Image (cartoon, rainbow over all chains, first blue to last red; front, side, top):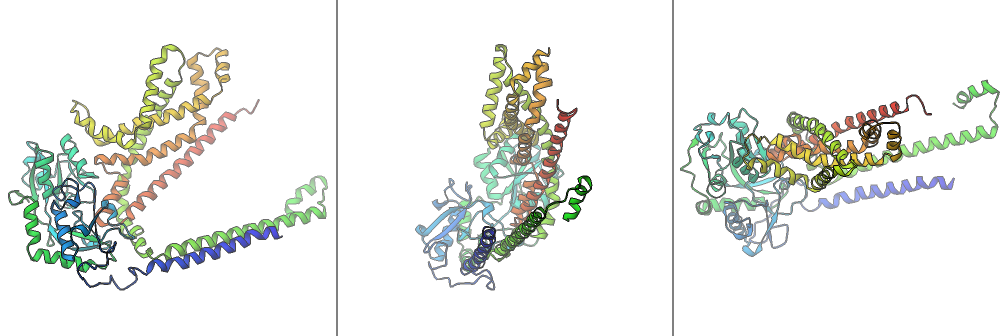
Length: 293
Length: 294
């Protein structure tokens, strides 16, 4: 009888322990950030005193490899390349000098995973969209994006003059990119597009003739044709579709309390001409590329 | 209950269970009932605790929205099913090729006689190399390396190339499974077959292989399920399979629900496959037992 009772008692103890753990643990994690608070709380944007992930430091995330012309030599901390320069300009606005900026490698798919983020903001050519805003917070846009088509010189794809001329081609784009959305929604090709994990793989496929043309944002297209696939050319760019233009934004945790401060910093940089100057310095002028209609 | 069960005995030989036995049986029944009740209760409690822990965790509302959103599930399912067609086509074609090639390699490795040495050595080198080479490297080399050679008449289709890379790697795994099966057949079986006048080839075909294959069906199924999941890696070259279709939606809208949908679809595929193999194994066992034991 006593032996038989043991499992029962054990079970009872375990239940109590588990329940205690369940009830006890849950509220603890809740205090910082406070997801049930009415919206993300704002804090004052005192220079250098933001509620950042690491005290006194600004942690900035980006993917690896970090592609040119957005970053230089896969080294975000160099300050060279458009996005690296923008990150440091935003940091300076917020009161963090170059030494107080830490870089973190954040794969694209982790930038929007729920849970605690290890970065204060992520800069990785991420376009702002309404659907994405349900998962993360965005700063205001720091760059107006246009999508472009890259094809090998002399190929039939390179002679395309219009969107209709692209429709019968085998197109490629990177997964998760707005380039892919342009393929699906604007070009609507007859053949199923090829979708690549990284732009590097898309470039290989272009070189091998496995796809006729690839779509990327315009600065990347310029970089590919000038430095990486020299026998390729930028066929054309797409006009900004719809009413809202596509913009890259800094990604923040949905519950981040510094979103307002970061947005204010980006707005100030746009207003005082810093962003335009950085664009001119790091990104090729797009005027010469024909617009596909 | 006890009366019912005891009834046929009573009718047959007039056996009346002793009071002791009846008492013992009653005791056992109460213990069994009690055990069932305890198990049910503890299962219930565990379920409740798990439910409370998960739904009570601070991130649950966000997690539910990002991983279990009905809206995104409905959006993802058609695309995931479309991608699944690619997985299934690859599974059927590569699966068949892998089984045939694997069996040939295994047989080549187990051939006796000095004249077969080069064949044995080649088969051994092949299995050693492709079993050790990480699948993703094999895929990258075949999918992007072969077209880079610009050979006339060789396809650049990523699905065909990716499929061949899968066959290269998996036939090496499967060859080892088959070899283990062949070597597990006792030598006396071969000796008996030869003493009946069968040639070496006949002994292999009619005596050794049937026994070997039957023994390795469960591990073969493992490899097939593994192949089924790995067919998605072909997407490295741009083809869109079920998992990749999910990733495209996840990357577009920053929601992970499509992954959950794709995962469930694969699990749903695996379960009938397992049941089917169980059925095949059972049928083979029945056939073996036909005619009874001697």
